[in-house]
Image 1: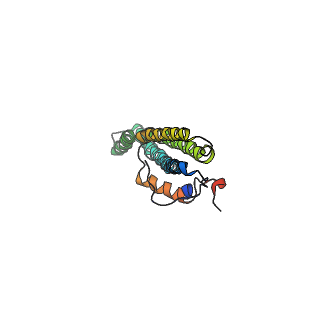
Image 2 (image 1 turned 60 degrees about the vertical axis):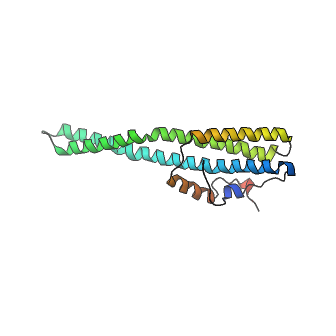
Length: 185
C-alpha cells in the first residue's frame, strides 16, 4: 500500500533475531510485511489528521458564515446583498464539505491505520518471539495469514495523499515508531 524510498529508523532499528537458514526467507518476508505495515499505518494516521483538519477548515466557516448571513438578513430592514453573498459562500463551504466528506474519510483512515498497527504488532511478535520456536509449517501458515490480512487492509484503505506521505516519511525518519527497546547500539 505504502512505498518507502529510504531506510527508516522504524525498520532499521528492529533488532532481528538470528534464525535458522531454512527460516531466513520467511523471516525476510515477515520483516517486509512489518515494514510495510509501519509505513502504511503512519501514512493512514497522517491522512486521518489531514481529513480531520479539512472537516474543521470547511465546516467551521460554513457554519459561521451561515449564522452571520442569517443574522444580518434578519437584522436588516430591506433586502441586502451582504447576507446573500455570505449565504452563497457558506453554501459553497457546505457543498465542499458534502462532496469531500472528510468525516467518512477520517473514520476510514482511522480504521485502516489501526488495522495496519494490528498487522505490524502481529508481524513483529511472530518475527521476534515465535519464529524460532515454531515448526516450519506453522510459521509458513502464519505468514500466509499475515499476507491475507495485509491484502485485505490494502484493498479497503484509501491511498494516502502526497502531503500525508511526506508527513509519514518525516515522522518515521525521526524515529516516530521506534521503541527504545529496538534501538540498535
